[in-house]
Length: 322
Ligand SMILES: NC(=O)c1ccc[n+]([C@@H]2O[C@H](COP(=O)([O-])OP(=O)(O)OC[C@H]3O[C@@H](n4cnc5c(N)ncnc54)[C@H](OP(=O)(O)O)[C@@H]3O)[C@@H](O)[C@H]2O)c1
Figure (tube, rainbow, N blue to C red):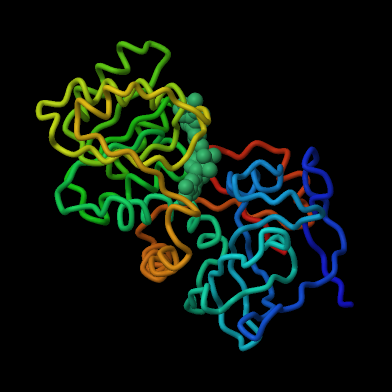
């Protein structure tokens, strides 16, 4: 058995530990063993390592990491999606199915690609696969101050939105969206009336909402927007993507009857693996061309425990480097 170093989760209550682990072995002729060069520490990776993601199967020990950049045995540099939830990307080596990877040009900033793909994919896939964006449409990003939300503002513009509104709670990060491409911003505060009025004034005619929050902010925003809509028969596509503000929201039935309100989600399961794969090459091309801003924070994999327990600097994405 060949050994490697990896981030290993032995208990869902503890961060992963850096320790030796058996190097993975391909399960079929479609798979190869890649040298991992960078793997992003995304919220999805944290929830998987805590046994809390909806795809988690509860198996321990496990190696977290859903994607990364690696070098294949034939020398190709690739972005890859991990093939296995139990033996993932945060290790010296990972199993890669070359059909689920995208070749990168030599000289690519591997930390940037590893940092950006997961957050950028959330809006890219939503606007291409769930509610295909029509040129000139208006998009509201609810929860626009995080990595995924900030990228969503840029992605919406890149894919042809006419007007993009960012809504979030942190004022300075919200204001920074204006030079980054947002046409307007709305601050979400504890004052529900003021927040509702702000959303109604800026986004009553939105065509698509990319929702990273859910919970009570989404619940309030749905009613604020629907009641302010000049033409309620005009479609409002609400795409549920993240739930940082709460796992549940109470939606009055009248929201669905009184307006052309179309609620759906975007994530693993609602979009097929084939659907995701089809979008990867064009998204990789935008990220390597630098059109989607990203700030990676590279950390050696040996420091995984520290990286796990240290809060991320807002706007940065931690990337583990084996
Ligand atoms: N479905 C998918 O395909 C997909 C893909 C990627 C990410 N996601 C999900 O999207 C979410 C965001 O991911 P990320 O990578 O952007 O994470 P991130 O960089 O950590 O950003 C999270 C942001 O959420 C904001 N936030 C937290 N609680 C909030 C609240 N109660 N009200 C308003 N804002 C709040 C924080 O904003 P401030 O502190 O600045 O206010 C923070 O910047 C996560 O739930 C993630 O799992 C889904």
